[in-house]
Image 1 (tube, rainbow, N blue to C red):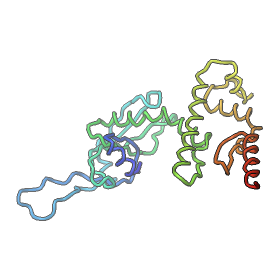
Image 2: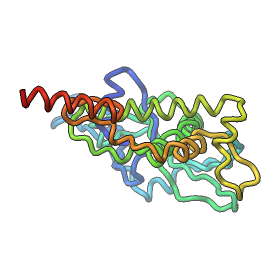
Image 3: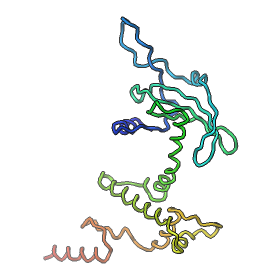
Length: 243
């Protein structure tokens, strides 16, 4: 999670919860300035080092995360984040227990809302699980990661078309229809065929594989038309040019 994103959200009065680098520079609040003390006011206090973190109180609890009860252990502190220009944040060093009973590597969560408890920060961060599958499919199956557009306008068009395509297949997955079930039946080795947007997409690709979609784009007219209409327009354009 980068500063440019956090600053943009804060400008719109949104609080941000996300994961940051484990080696993010954190500091205590500076000590209270004494009356008549000379010198410039300090912005940061003592640095939060790995040795200090190891001495923080560690709490072990069970939280409802990712659709199931999961054991979590964490340490937490209010600190100033250097990359946020000294903004006070709630940071949580947390570890999740794997299915084999082993503790995973520590991750560092950051919340700009300092009123939240460590458990609330972890649970709020876990809410991203419900949309992770959507972004995963958009990047890998719908080609969002393969955007090579050079201008902002064409990039926005590509993103909107991709989102519309995903949304339509996602809505189709909610329809109880034999035709939709047939679209998902393209993996005979599976005992069950889940009805998901990704499975429906694979079925549609199989049906429309013979359609040369790229030929529909007219580079001259900058329009997306069927090949017959495009060829007719190009022919009329050439006739007018000859005349």
